[in-house]
Every structure is written in structure tokens, then in C-alpha cells.
Length: 200
Figure 1 (tube, helix red, strand yellow):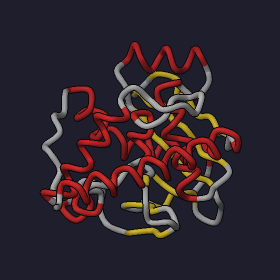
Figure 2: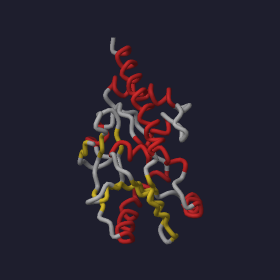
Figure 3: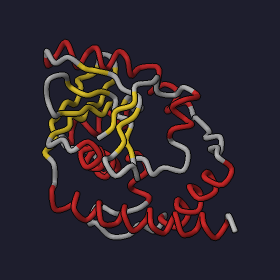
Figure 4: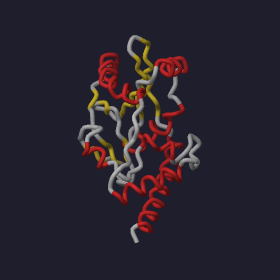
């Protein structure tokens, strides 16, 4: 993979992500079963548009999203204190092919393990803790991040101040990652084709 060190959320970071499939959106390309998602075409057209105008449409941030961003540094610090792991923050990880990327919440130093942090609303966090496993909503993102980086493990953390956290280490699902890789390559081929048509 190619690691790009810039601040997530910065102008440079947004520019690097223009028209590039990102792990946080892989669920719009493929389902947990490795089949094409119903949202695939809409996401395909959105990325094609980004490439044509060389910019991203403004994304609305609701209260939960804004709160999650604000709490993330505290969650990362809590994770480090709890696990004794040292977390390196990076801007973007790009797959060796250059076709798709992920923006991890951290890479564990001196290892091949990544980190995904969520700071959801209280009721959602409690649901995650009680279920004790990777939430389905983030299955494609976490395994997609492992596909991008080539890593075999990825920590998933759900954090809410003063409530028990969820900290789990997810093992790479090779069968799913193979299916995801095939779908991503096909998606990117189609994306290139659409951009060529729109550029004529």
C-alpha cells in the first residue's frame, strides 16, 4: 500500500479522495455476501461526476457525525491506554493498484494491525457492546481496510464516555476480501468507462 500522511478532513485529504472508492463506502459497492449492492450504480455515478468536475459534493454532517469526530481523539487515547498499543495517525492508505483507498483511524505501530473508531449515540453504542461483535454496518469498511492495506487484523472500537467500551480485534475474512477485490476492480473498470464517455 501507499501511505499518505496528511490530516484527515484537510483540503489536501479531500482532494486525494476525489473520484476514488473509499472503504467507508464499500458497502455501496458490495454486500456482506460479496454481491453487488443496490446502491452500486448511484455511488458509481457520484464518483464519475467527481472525476469530471475534480471536486466532491458537499456532504452534510448531522449532530451524531460531528460529535463522533470530536470524540475520536479521546477514544484513540483510551484505546492506547487500555491496550498499551501505540497508534500512528495517517491521512490515507491507497491500495497498491492505486484504484481504491481507506482512511483508517490509526495504524498500530510495529504491527500489521489497523484501527477503526466509532463514537455513536448512546443507544447505538450500548447495542454494539451488548452484541459484542463487529456491527454489520461496518463489515465492508473494516474488511475493505484490510484489503487496501494488506493487513490481517483490524481493531474495531466503539466509545462512549463513562460507558463500557467495545474493543474487538477482527480477523481478516479472506473469502470475502477476494470477492470484494473482484467487485472493486469491476467497479473501477466501469467507472473509467463512464468517465471516458462523459469526457468525449
